[in-house]
Image (cartoon, rainbow, N blue to C red):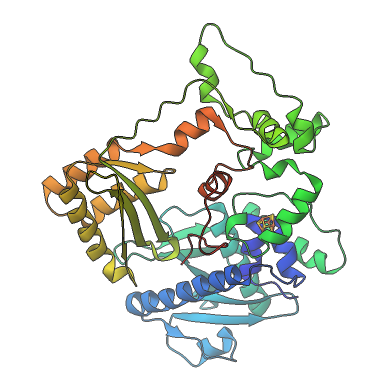
Amino acid sequence: MPISDLILQGFLTCRTKGYMQSVGTIATEPEFAEYQTRIANDLAQKFHLIAAKKFAAVMCPPGISFVNAFRYSNALILVNCAIRTQSIRTVIHGVERIADNNRTEQYFPLRLALEQKITKIDKILLAFDAIAIESQTGRIPTFGRFIAKDDKDKSQKVQLTDSIMDSARSALNELLAFESKQPPPEIILNRHCSECEFQTRCRKLAEKCDDLSLISTMSAKERLKLNDTGIFTVTQLSYTFHLRRNRKNPDSIYRKRYNALTALAIRENKTHVIGRPNLEIGKKSIFLDVEGYPAKDFYYLIGFCYEDGDDGSLTYQYYWADDPSQECTIWENFVATLKNIGSPTMVHYGAYEKEFLKKMNKRHSVSEETKQFIDDLANNSCNVLSTIYSHIYFPVYSNGLKAVGGYCGYTWTVPNASGGP
Ligand code: SF4
């Protein structure tokens, strides 16, 4: 199958994902693939709008190569440039033409930057666009540019160094080699699995092998180190647990996560507790859960519950935004409810909610009094996950809310519900 930037992106996040996409494996969760395609289309659309406004860019007509399209256009930038060769099938966000000193035209790739910080994966994707341009012109672009999605920011020029180009070429070659019956890469579960269209398939295979990557808190480095000592399965790991106390610094045992103890908890189907977890959740507490849409950089759901009245009954409430224009309204409604409750303690699971409070406070709070109120709330919030991380070992592979909640007997109305919109 010809390689697209989406397949390459999949490969750069997980080799197995790139392999399965490139050989056309049927997804077990197609909704995640549809979501990725939707994000890619949204980005392309956004790029078009920004490039048209900033640089008077025009759309590359469908069915025409960008080289021919430039011949009949005065535009310096064309957007949505489709490229089809035997090995590549992709749509470049934008191609820029610049005449050199000899009045020869050269072409350079443009991409929309999702975040201000350009990652290595972003650069390799830009290099892939450069390879696609080379397939049409015979000349490899020496640089490319990222266009910020924020109107205020400038574009960022990136030199396409030999090392970036080599990374893109070797990834492309590896993907093309999968077609010629190269053995598939081994399955190593990772943090991208929760948003991957092959998650059920990979999880089943990993469980069948009792693979160490099932334990989500285990780093790749630790797994490889264990493999070097002959430990490949969770059961094998479970026999290695030994708690070493440090007499000089007794609290140091709580700062570490013992994956071998997780393995032991799983083997014995027992919860283990180290030390005395101290989780103080006051009476006036709000339990907060937030969902966002990173590609559009907006939060669309604020869900929370709190004790209302003396009988201990819980009130559940949520605010929903259909699009980014409604984000400010749901934030204001949320803040108004918080102020009505008084000065609650915010209880959340993981760092995402605290980050949400800080980000939204900066983005939408106007009065100094509100800013201070939210800052205090964020600074005094209670992260349940940090207590679990230091002290509690449930017999589950991950400390995720679904895994731990499921073990504690809670169920979700939609079994495969995820944070994605
Ligand atoms: S589920 Fe995980 S291991 Fe499997 S392809 Fe997706 S990201 Fe890779």
